Length: 102
Image (cartoon, rainbow, N blue to C red; front, side, top):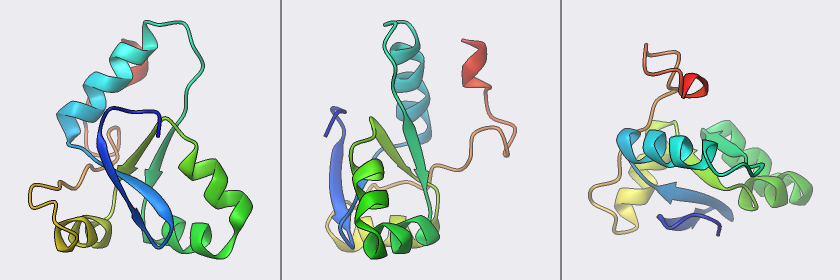
């Protein structure tokens, strides 16, 4: 785990418990530290690919942040005890901030 977020495994794939604001703020902070990082925006398809393919699972689980962009992942987080788990939609698709501009 490379973030300070809480996270859990859903079918062996790490998914961070975060929110839209936390995810955006984290990426903006990282953009200022001159280090290479990567973020995975996870949905159910990605979860199943991760479950089926060890190499893909390692890539996802070693990322700096795994954002839940799928209601079923959020439902799983809530069922596993994270009542405030939030669906973090694709930032640009929904008219959110273009993080790269920061």
